[in-house]
Every structure is written in C-alpha cells, then in structure tokens.
Length: 129
Image (cartoon, rainbow, N blue to C red; front, side, top):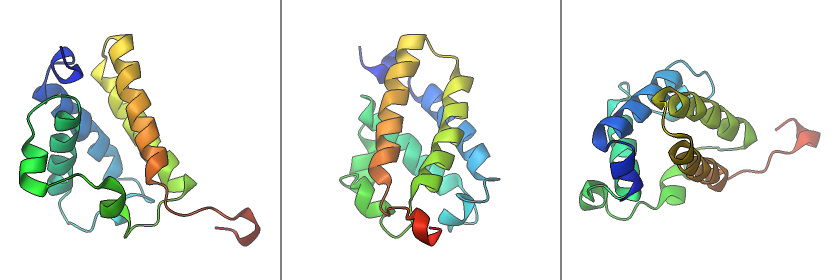
C-alpha cells in the first residue's frame, strides 16, 4: 500500500494543502512569494505534486512535466527564515490531519528534507541577511 492510499488518498492531501495555504495567506514572509491573487492555482499544483509523489495519480507530471522543484523555486529568495516559516505552516497542517504517528512521521520527514533542499541563498549574519 502506498502512503497515498494509507492516509486516505486525495481528500487527505487536499486537506493538508488547504490547511497549509490558509497559513500562507496570512504569512508576511511567504505570501509575497505567491504572485497570483488567488492561492488556488498554487494549492492545486502542490496537491497534485504531493499526491503523485506519494503514489497517487500522475496528473502533476501529465500537466506540468518533471517537477524540477529547485528550478521552479529559483526565482524566489529562500533562506533559513523562509524555510522555517514554510515548515511552521506545514507542521501545523500535518498536525491537523491527525494521522497515525508512523504515517505522519514519514510525511513530515519528506517535507522537512524538501524544505531544506529548496534553500537557495546562504544567510550571512555579518551582513544582516
């Protein structure tokens, strides 16, 4: 059984992403990274990506090609502060799913690694960045 199936399939991933983007909508650091007025398109892309990654339908790749996550996020400055804000919002979303602990840990471990992987600038304490 895939994690996609084990957590309840598409409805669970939609809830996860909806919870996540509810936080993003009011996050002063992250909201500006989403140029679309409506967060709906970004939420749909993330939902499709996560579903595919965890064993669900390959709709994401069929619509958008290879994920190329770093390339797609390259236009945005992602440092430690942005990573940590993303993780705070995602942690809240994962916790709200109330998954079995083993499933929640598996999901969280991936999300945490992904957040660290997206960092594309080094913060320099000597320069206040």
